[in-house]
Image 1: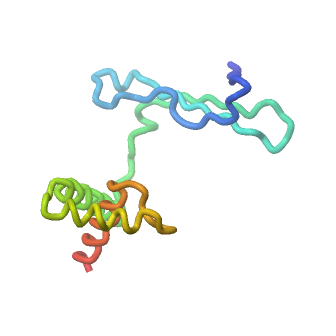
Image 2: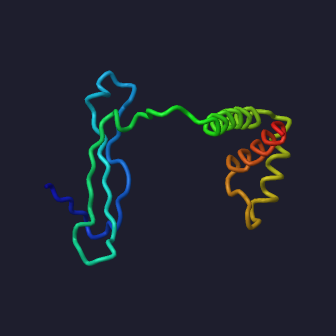
Length: 129
């Protein structure tokens, strides 16, 4: 078994080191490398893991549930609304003023993009009720 050793400055590694390019004609031959390193509750030294996954283990093989479909539809609609609103010159000035007014509040959005997603998300939800 191979051993993965990390530099002392690295306490945790979590995620893909390499990913599969699904658009490639060689996607079936590629492997995704996942590495994890956690501080174990015990004093053992085996807290590093390295996984190889093929395309079949990455591709979904169950049908979408109705809730997932509605979530994806909402995301697509709100994304389009945000893109349209960013370019609508009649709303830009008021959006900037509203953003600055809420930015320093406890639950305020810190970026204009996050604020527009919040506003457009609320508009979409109200239109669906």
